[in-house]
Length: 468
Ligand code: GLU
Image (cartoon, rainbow, N blue to C red):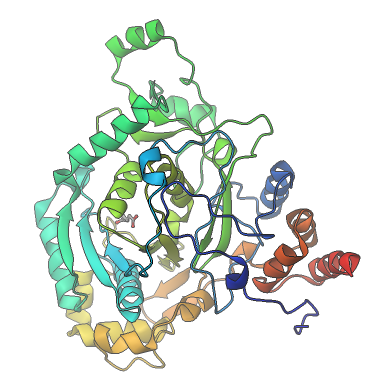
């Protein structure tokens, strides 16, 4: 028994078959994933009632953010209903005997100079890959018009080099890779999974609640069933965007994407109700980030995606696309954001603590990296250190321990904000989340709990005793 009276159990790794990115495969986590008939409607309603941020990010399966030190390096995808893998030719590929080498990536958008948050994200990607003997790919994400600034891309590259975060491949530029995105889009179109959408931004925002993780409204399907004549008629007036259908099920949200994030733990999202059909190409012809990033991560052999937790909410869409296109799913690790004292997250456009200023202030990359690593708990103190010297200090446990967003106060350094609202498991969620678990799944569930409330603990113990 652990201190809070919950059963100590095998680590999740004992339960979780590693998801090897086997194209099209949906690895099941025995017990833990035995959520058949759990009633996601209830779970969703409970979790949204509790947090008040229905769509802020994928829901945490256990209402917590912590994973045991032996955290599973597993991505779980459960999409047994309607979802199709349209790349069946790849689905039978034999599993490789050799462990796949770790490949991380930097994927900056050249919309401005890097800020301290971007440095932290690149540092974590780099340290994670290097600490596993892996490599790094550099990809410049310049699809958007406002990112087509070669001088900003050059500055980003210079800043990464100055920091000593060297990469092994690239830089690749997304604007050079449009044919790859086009091909992937055709695959989806040929499988009948897309449709033209004529909705204006104003219509989208008026018709639905916002998708709080990235501001994208949940799409209610206004253009889903347009006739060919209607499409032709509207196309004369307006170029359509292209949307990808997500599976619709009668029971609200039965089709759930689940994955384990290395920092924020088990996550799930029902695309149908929490996202809706999403864009794969905008009406101005620009490929959507979700499509490009999935195509590129696969083409570049990326096995590990480390990025800010503002993108946690995009991950289910990316996993869905990977599934459809028969592409492997990398491991995901989202990291806390750095915030300004007024509660905004640092942004390139606002030139918050940008690298120009930081380079001038700290003088050397060792001073800056050592200070940052000390502040974030990666290193024991703020001694100047090279990126290479930080490798031995790095561990995901430290990042998990600091997973709340960090307020960056320029005068006093960094301070932790209050705990994430999902950090405490309450009794309702405990009940809803464990109703259909097998004993093994229940044990795995408890293993990853952080700090359940006393009522939640009581609920869990009651459930446990029912088996004994
Ligand atoms: N290009 C994105 C950014 O600079 C990151 C995308 C990703 O890591 O998936 O914020």
